[in-house]
Length: 233
Image (cartoon, rainbow, N blue to C red; front, side, top):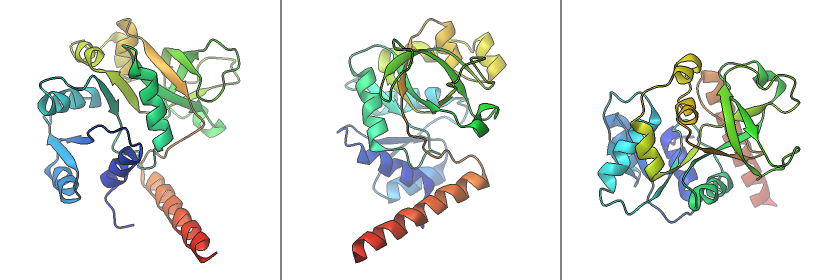
């Protein structure tokens, strides 16, 4: 709809109204210029980073060397319609705890055996957890886990970090399980860093393929038509 993808993500962060700076960390001047042109803040980072956690660590240290900010919400640049509710609820989980926090949602039948959809083995106090319950992560995999469970959880690539935990995490070498599954959050679990899990019923569209892009474009058209209809009423 004439708006760069990164600015859709930026607007989603803005909608959360957490009253904290919103930064785009990138190694691409095109993205940097688009964000600045549209009134946002962007920080150029090293092109050699292999993970988003390394990139945001460099960005926050450049932006805030005095360490005034203790918590970080880490959004991915390909999640344009992540909701303000999900962002703010995740912020609440990490607010008074030294941990990593990340959301999960129930996987669809099509997603269960899709290796591009990361699954999470999570432990909750209640046997039948409800939306907005908080648990802890035991494992992440591209395979269907745990075997025999009715609830297979789809991990959403959004994180809330305690800054000291982020400092600790980026010093660690890639771990054996991380290399095997190609999932960096396993590095944290292998280092005994706690990952809190927020159960949600939301499933923002992650744009990894042309089909994903079409899905998002269709959702934008639907929302626009809905808005125009309500306006006419």
